[in-house]
Image 1 (cartoon, rainbow, N blue to C red):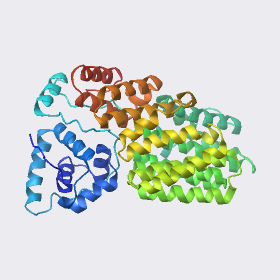
Image 2 (image 1 turned 135 degrees about the vertical axis):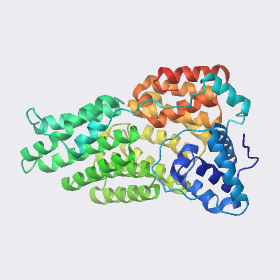
Image 3 (image 1 turned 60 degrees about the vertical axis):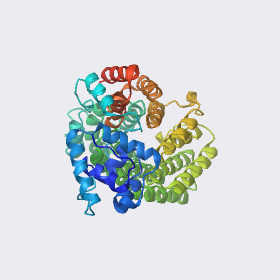
Image 4 (image 1 turned 180 degrees about the vertical axis):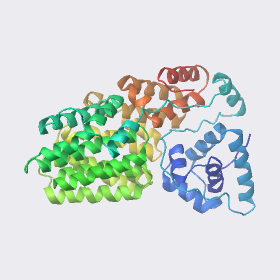
Length: 445
């Protein structure tokens, strides 16, 4: 099997091309910032990845198929002779946060044992929920055969969709949205003058949750379409808080499609506009403002921009202190505890797995009341332990996330890949337990 004593940027780029991955997809596969991988590609053998990335690259290579290894060796040979190490691939959307770690013991004997245990099968993922009916409703909504919803009924239905999302009931939410989307135009037609801006604000919330669930199930391109519709409806409402809330899902969708720089800019500009237009005079405004800068902080971390990420975290901390409680104003789940959850994620995104775990230990779990947020915390902890090579603790965290929200594991390709990594990378009884958990959670092996 191909081995690398010390990885250079040129070697890493050869591996990326051998895997036929875009810069964005490879960055997320490694748990690195996109800018870091782009730097490897541009600077070649003039740059050496840091120690944790050296280990992560070892792990990815050890798991590669024979065909990938053969391509990798060929590309390295070309690269070391001074030619270009493979043609650059077109950038594509990010696929998953895999939480790959540096398991230095991933030798050929370990690979054989893993293949024996998994009966030669590659790690797969469970089939994502069927989003075709939702996309049909999004682009070609059929007229409802029943009575049109009243304004109050539509308001309750949008609220119920938001509740389903925050409770990680994604399959139920998809069904609900299929019937909710066609009701929008009849509700608009029946709204009087005073109700029309409120209907548009509700439409923005509805498209927001459409975009959110599409991101969860991995359909990032369509999530961006839904996010754009949310921003359009919010602009029609002329409600500054609705406009800023829709900017939050657009920021998230931009990140899902690898546009982190644009996401940082959008989050910052939208937060400034909200502050200017409202003076943050309501708790809704403060909560949306705080949630926006948190989303911008994550985007900055993905670009390996520590200064901006930490500056936005501090701004969110000030907003949380201004609110003074952990709430769910305007469906943000925003408060001091939510800021702490984002500190965990940002530390992990920046490659500081130990810091992420240390922060996670300080989170008051009794204050994390939303299933989606609590499950996300344990998923981040699982990724951090996996990056650390502590697979047993990673599996425990992933089991806890599954207990909190089974559909967060079953429906999300990004999370399924973490389970797959644990099943592939761990050893002995931990590997057996990881395989059993993956199978029980509906992840194909």
